[in-house]
Length: 81
Image (cartoon, rainbow, N blue to C red; front, side):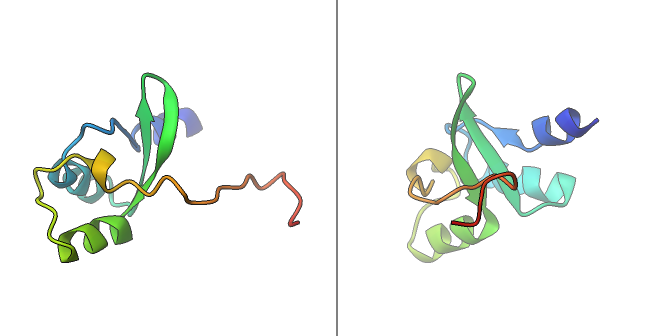
């Protein structure tokens, strides 16, 4: 069941910003995982989309051009340091 919940939150980097927003609305979340050919590309948040709109990106643009690939990720099993 956990895997199914995660799979619902996965999008392709070529997905449009509008389609990403629709997916977030459909499943009532504010974060999506971006994968390309099974490789993790990054996390897309509603905040990323809001900043892109403010900067003048179009809703038809792909999420790849607004994806912040410099975010720092950690697993709960990793030490705080």
